[in-house]
Length: 114
Image 1 (cartoon, rainbow, N blue to C red):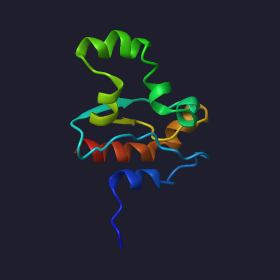
Image 2: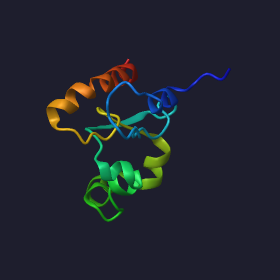
Image 3: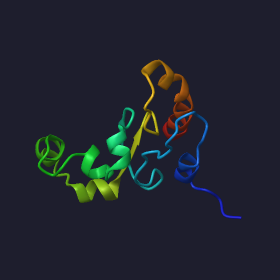
């Protein structure tokens, strides 16, 4: 029997009541030395190309103003960064319900930190 990777375990997680499970975790947490940690992904980030939507187009502020000053381009991000969220799946709930439903996501985050 094959052993699941950490990412596969996150993607199979069904510990909350969110209807559309598509955890946004990109990259290799064991290989990559850099982690970008964000808040809850939006519905658009879940349903569209993550790099284009979440990180913005190459002309957007993230790339044009911030990353370019450090010599970082989108290819470097795709190959060297593990990208994750405090909340793994897009939540379309009101905030009070979301925080309760997404409490399990914090367990995943704690496992990444330690």
